[in-house]
Length: 501
Image (cartoon, rainbow, N blue to C red; front, side, top):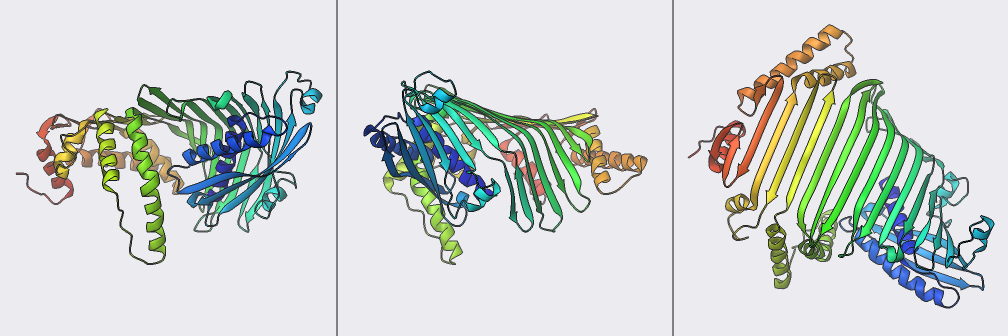
């Protein structure tokens, strides 16, 4: 499945980059424009795969030019961890109708002139043979792109329904997916909307018990704008009506309803920010409502030039080193040494200093779970700053790096009782009173242990812990202390009663 997901990502990125990136011209101009578009597509692929331990490239294999149409063939190559153990090679054919009035648009009563209309599809090869068989001998991936005279594009991408046995213990049933994409010239603005009705994966766990994952009503939406630094900012949304996972010897069913994921990125001058929000409207177990969940994370004040400089070192030095280290480990050889030139070391140091000087903030704004009788919640804020020197001892460096740390945790005892009761039901207990009594006793014990260790306090029916750090001063659950005193306190609880000087 990981390999298929990696292949699919490569396909979508490559096709999207070609479709959005270039202007189609008729006749002899087409090949040059195609080559330019493919070069841009390869840049987009390289950017999309940063940090993935994978590489991909697209090339024009052949081009047949005619008066009213042309036919192009492409090859997409992918290798690395995300594509599986062996390199992947996929072939595409593209039938290009020349403008201003392509025949297919006339037949559909679309008379607005366009530069060209592209009809592309995945070709049958030994690699894709099973995909074609699962799609009833049709190309499992097809698409249409209309290119305007202003070089803007709009079109559709379609993944056909699949029904296939992945191996002797696994099968996949997929309703298909439709994606509408529109882009301005040079893909400065991109908008996409997609929908999948259903997907069902049946397999077995390591203990050989059956596992079934069912997804229903998947909606995708993106509204992006290319920033001045070449990456996309904007909003991406994923919504899922419901999902069910059947697992275990007793074939328990864990369900999620109204799942929503939104991420948003913005750029202001040389600074970037972003946030991600996740929501599950209802969590169920064996058809019974358990609760709901939310999570929100944010990143602020990220210096873009410094980040891009550090990313360049990561791509050129760390990624090759990681691959070499993995190959050495697999061969039973010593791990190679990571060597940076003086210029590269200076680049890393300068990049880190600029990054920290901007005062980046990382926050877990909300992590919460609600049940019928209570809510538990946690949040964290971490502000970083530039230290006096990057060469300080590690303990001093850490203190100077952290400008602010704020952590708040609230665990609802009634919510614990609800969750412990659910666990007892999973374990097969049926006596409602016994389940409630055991859950209440366990929740009370958790509260007593937290209070007894001084790691938390009881406030009403909530187990509460609060940590605040700034200006080398710690406040933990209302008690102020120095950093050294706080470290000593933690070591006394977890490290064998180490004395604090």
